[in-house]
Length: 188
Image (cartoon, rainbow, N blue to C red; front, side, top):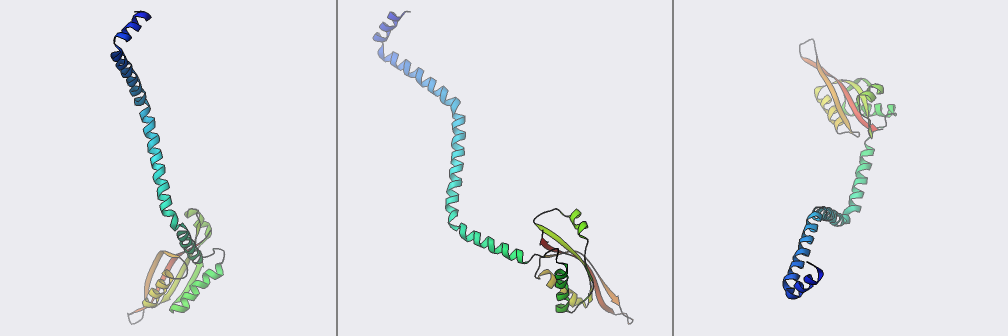
């Protein structure tokens, strides 16, 4: 088949030739689209996800100032309830104040070695300030001391405790004695 025969064939069958060329172009486009579809779909999905993210950011951005103020107030409240680990006298004064308020007798109160704390705990934005506290008093007063300690001015956690009641000569229970390991949350 030469060029002259091809021209005469096209002139003789113009509709069939155009349909064949159109089918060939469409087949090439379909093959090209099939290979490009995965890339196009992933680009579309990432664009849709980014659009959803921007839409939610716009919807929630109206309350950002209120949320920021709330968080700043909460941080100030938390900072006000933290102890300073280097202020040993002020930290001990806290326990003496609780002693005066509850009527228990503090037998011994001392900080636990900070080198032991550094090995045991992970470093973070807060420090652990631990105290060994031994107190005596009636059972009710000791419970009152524990409640005041738990709901006091500083964040507090009781690590361990041991409670014993002394026996009197008449065989009745005397004063209760309690030994505690108390952890106060402090600034690092």
